Image (cartoon, rainbow over all chains, first blue to last red; front, side):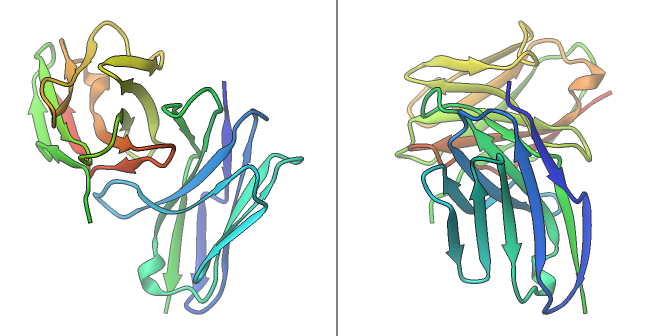
Length: 114
Length: 111
């Protein structure tokens, strides 16, 4: 089955700096890669996603890149703010159907310091 | 903005008891999911549900677990005889296509 690795497990940046979180996946058939932000005591909130036919996607301060050949994808947050502090999860979805499960990475705890 | 809701937010139960976790998916969504997250760990898939039947289930989803859509709005997860290791946060999610939207979760504590 699919296996998703995520690094780093913790990341501390100063406000205004950029943060990069990287994930690799094992199943070359995976075709959809969402990123979720989870704040303490809450459910995962989708922040951005990318499909396998696209190499990069940007939404304001957040961008995601995908390298299908290397089977890795990354989340980039620019001009970080204290409210960006949370745990971020990458995930991969297989191609077996619309209701295919998401396989999550182990999470990155991002701390944005003043 | 429509969202997935879950009840209860917290549930404490004794080992061996049955629990039912409830979810109201986003109204026009057709695909429903349950995931769980043990404290400090990653989110793990349990089961997906479409057209009134299970589409896919993980090895975690054994005979002690069942899901049901009892009416047009609710989606439930039942654990028949809870074990200590079932203590976790349980998330319901729904989707219209591949993008899954998660609820706030139910924290289950089995004593």
